[in-house]
Image 1 (cartoon, one colour):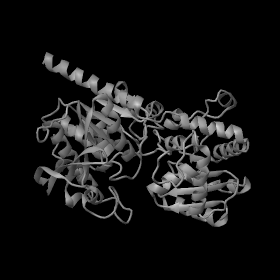
Image 2 (cartoon, rainbow, N blue to C red):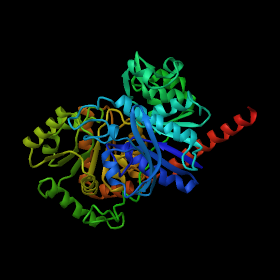
Image 3 (tube, helix red, strand yellow):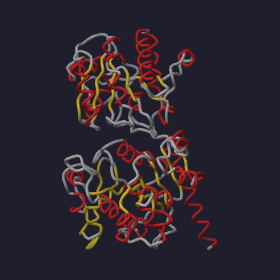
Image 4 (cartoon, one colour):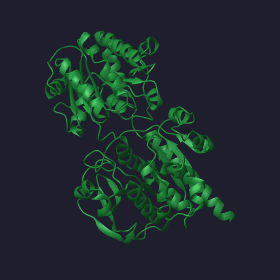
Length: 485
């Protein structure tokens, strides 16, 4: 079974968040089920520099007004296709924002061109290779499915995965005539409150829609969780499937992690202590005996990081320490920096993102804070489980499904893996922190909780099998339709 995956990010070549981790690890997991994936990504400057070599597959003389090449390469165990369009992707900044933190002015065109090229690869194939199904991820590639549905290759099965419904790809309607789609596609798929909605178009054009947890699949059917698309989601209700993300157990393996000076496992827990000291040294905090809390997250309202900044005094009063690593809203960044100034012996912050440091934080901290107001799935808590860093999570989305709360019954049954809290506000978060401190002081209970967390199956095994079942079902339905046509 040959699948074309279309994504704006893939780890380790280009990453701004969990999307890259998923698209980088899922293809490897699918191999076990006989699914061969080629992943199409944009040729950003960072991607082109990271490729060891590439061969030319196709050229474009006029792709939305620019010249481009389609390249094939292999890197990090992935089979890749790269759209090398320098005028669109060879520029400073990140995939979606320029070096000043502003959206690229032509994002509507950049990702329309990317999607158009993806639809041609998906429909016609390249160099004796043709996929049997297209799997697009998020708004950046959602238009791929619209080009297929309204083009010559409408019969190709189409899957869309929504990693976060809050990011939808909205652009002025005046750009529609330049997309090269038929007029009917505007009213049927693209029109979104008088603008263009790339994600909405993908939701309409997809045969099946997956989201990254069953709980999130329910939440997005409501006006509160649907982000303006709850009507579309309810109309497609029967085709929406929640599948929890997994993680790459080779990249995130504490027993042989190259980012750690002290690799460890559930069988060698004492070696973990060395990472604690390395972590405190990196953040300039004293070697005290209190609990070390951490958060590796985007510093945004969605992630609830303003709540965490507001309760920083809790770490002072409970003789705990907090390390924060991430970037995002300048106002929230400032709140954390102010907290670090007020409590220099208890709070330390590093703005930005460094993959190696993220591994050390998971390996050295005692607890990982994920206070998201909404969270489709989340990967941070899964990395934390793997590394014996107890997750403290808001009871929402995939967080509520992947963490078993350490209530008395779950602790007694040795089933607990973390702490959940509700309501998702200052009071709820403070109560969760106080619960964690009490558990931490019960040394044997905390160590049992850590061991149980590390036993959790965070792999792609079950989820990859579910994706394979979706692919097979669509291909069988497609074959039956062709026989009856």
